[in-house]
Length: 218
Image: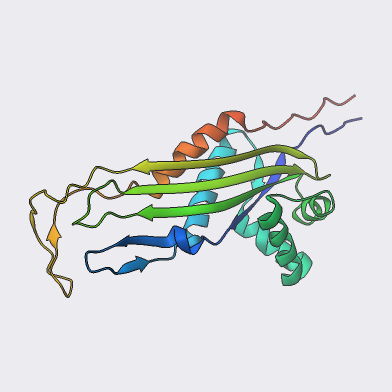
C-alpha cells in the first residue's frame, strides 16, 4: 500500500493589483507639468511567471503556469467563477478553505501558489533634475494546499537605484527627435525590472518549501 505525503504538484495563480494614482505620478518638469504612466502589467506578469518558474524548477516541482491555470479555471468555472477566485486572492492574498479544494481539484494539483504584484514602478529623473532613478517592485505570495492550509507566505519589497543624475553635468549632445530639443547627458537610467525581481526571488528560494517525497510502498 502506498500513501502520498505532502505535495508535488502546484499551480501558480499570479494577479496584479492596480497601482494608486500617487504611485504613478512622475516628477514635474520645469514648466510645472506632471506626467503619469501606467505600468505594463501584462509584461510584469510574464516576467514574474518566467522567473518564478525557474525558481520552482530548482526545487523539483511539477507546476501549472499562471496563464494555463487561468484558462483551466475559466473553462471549469466560467468567467464569473474565475473572477470570484481572482477577487479573493486580490482581497485576501490567498485562497481560503472553501476555495482552495475547488481550485486544486480543477487544476489537478496539490497546492496553489498565489502571487500578487502590488507595485511595479520605475522613477525616471529628468535631465534638469538631481537625484537617482529607481525601480521598485512589491510582491506578496501565499502557498495554500488543497485543504486551505497556508503552508508558506511572504511579502517582499525591493528598490534599486541607478546612478546619480547631476543637472550641472555638461551634455554630450542634443535630442533631435522631440518637438523641443533636450540635452543628452549620457547618465544612466533606473535598473531593469528583471534585475530587481531577481533580488526578491533569491531571498524566496531558500525558504520555499521543498516537495515531500511519497512514502515507500508497504
